[in-house]
Image (cartoon, rainbow, N blue to C red):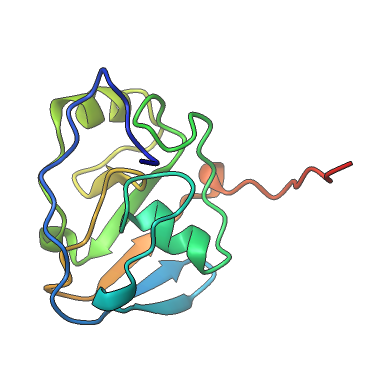
Length: 136
């Protein structure tokens, strides 16, 4: 499964029971997540903010491949924070290394919304990778 790290306990997640929206800032793009088609991205836990962003063409830098082994996918959840599972000790340890951490900070690879409310998520400027490598 994408987004797993054998050295970090994954969060206890609940699958959404209804559709919900995630608004990503600063690009101001809102996406709808269907509980029947929860994103299982290449990186991050299934249904995570990272998987949702990836499925919708939004770039969130994630140097470790979305396995909770770095802090590059740090996001700030302005609304809908309570729909996320509690951060694990492993996630909190990684967040200690992220710049600009606040009370609403999470790692996008570990934050899996349960669908109980809509979210507004900011991708900080230092986490937006604007350079793309070309495949040869």
